[in-house]
Length: 614
Image (cartoon, rainbow, N blue to C red; front, side, top):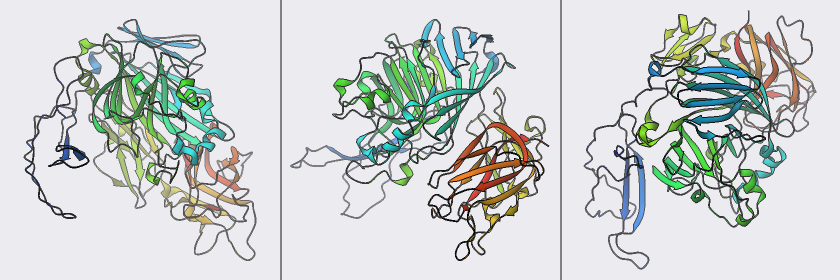
């Protein structure tokens, strides 16, 4: 796939090089290497290049004519493509920001975006007087967390849990909303929204909205869950656009619908459709229309203007005239309501399809489990005067992402962020990396204690948030009521190895619940919650009911900061406190086991810390 054409129509995906091999004489079950005379083209900054190899019949057969395509494969070329151009932050006009009751109003040249403090999302978005998101009383049209899809026939192995947890009807509440006006060209709004299902099911949606003076909005998302079903339909956001934006263009897999485990037949390319054409009228109405590995998607009017959505990496996108709830309620397509507005779903991922309607569920690598996810996209205005859609989509947002910090079992710390113009700076003593940070150049050993802080910065970039790592070297177990020698020593609950575990004594004379584990974090931190990883190789000892206490001195514990029940599955459990607490010591009381046994086991216990507090 080559560079875009000069017109404002979607550029052609005709090949920039092509050729035909002589007839290959390869015996069955044999192979041979073939050299393709490919010349590296002039590489367009930010472009993607693919090689498509296709095999056709050399002769007529009873079932197809000569030239019929029988197999193909698309391969991404390993070219070192120059980075796309960075939007010039210093050349952007300034923005105004004011609060009027429930509303936060940000305005600039040809831009007006209104956030609602009540809903924690965009209430309306207009570009040059044209609405991209309309403010409709009683409706949430701005991006909101979305974890439900209309069950497909193959979802029968897991869909019951979706309905039980009421993933189709999450109750949203805004926990916090903060405004950063320090740079008038890039105003930040940070929101935390809790989306509750039935019972213990809770999703936390952390969003950083960065509104730029050129009208682009960077939307960085982090979604965490607790008590969620063991298999999720999807994880992402949903928004509703006006009916006028009915033309759909995307750069990703297509042209037909495709899913994580059903996408090999869909080449990455530039495709154009209408939203109405995205609906597949299955006899049993169900989820439909998804597109995988989407780099960007645009919804435009007949005049060519509209909204451009660009992923920081890739995403799954669905554009329909129906919500998943409407698809789920209808038995057949004729029962669907008539509506003209556009339901746009931007997903980190969807669950694979598998074949459970008459066979097995998806392979494990395609099953979407409840675990923390982060994904970023940007909302951008588009008009034909800006150039082609690919040209507009390739420009890189001048907003640095969070730094991902990982510490391996060998003590090495690795830092990473996905931005070609960003530089990582970090400190290992808990000081501010913006003012005291070293430039990150490679993994480093972190075994002497302290706290790693990291931030992504760069010339012309809005700095990213500071990321924090608490060293396990300073953590230690100070009390365990029981442990099984040679197998389940308590220290294994904090050794960073998910394949080892603390296990209370079992066998003759085994102690019964409650069981207790106390951990010294090595310093006082502001804690926002904790994580519990159950034993991975067996359900034996997995905690059901629990209480969690914290303390500054390991003497005064007070009431539990959190109580609850864990589900019986091996996924990491993340629990958030109602309000952050400062503590050095953690005390976990296991009150029962998932199968009623006397044992308790913990593969890993850790805390969610926001900063040092001593």
